[in-house]
Image (cartoon, rainbow, N blue to C red; front, side):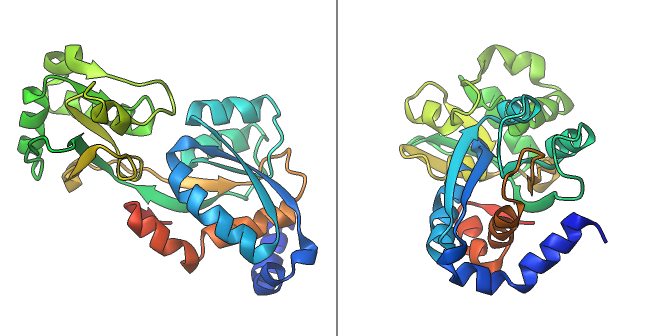
Length: 252
């Protein structure tokens, strides 16, 4: 059994005790993709209250999370896509075997508040909505890369590319829609729902949904792996499920 496996098993067996003893308090540095901002901003304070630990969260775009870890930035726990963390593990930037999947987002569509909602319940409906839109906001992150692939498979990428608008990395597409800069916006549902000034239209049809997985992992620069394991355990526990459901995330 690896040292990491032993540590996680120990954290699991004494999890309730750890969470009840503020005397074990630690300072935890959490480096996360902005895609998980709202869920972590709600879950982490509850963890702090229960455990006595203090968590400092640094949010960056997924690309910048990878860059920071490659640069050797200190973090006790990292949140990014499973593929990004696996690549970092190959470079020994992530502790081998420490990755745990915790959230699976879906991609959806939003329009400005009060605007007509297109029918995107079918692939053909979504195709027609993109062709009819005067402007389309989408992310530079994983959901945006996926959308480009969808548009190419639908055979409309060349027809709509002049209408495509992307905000800076880490900036919510919904904010552009709310300001009227994009007629419709496509992004992960958990990133759309919290934005004021927009109406959520719905998820993409099932056959168009990406397989996106966000994971937790311990960076090689971690100073307190035991505290990181406690936070990881909390974020993958049943306590997180209501928050994930509210934000349109599937657990694990």
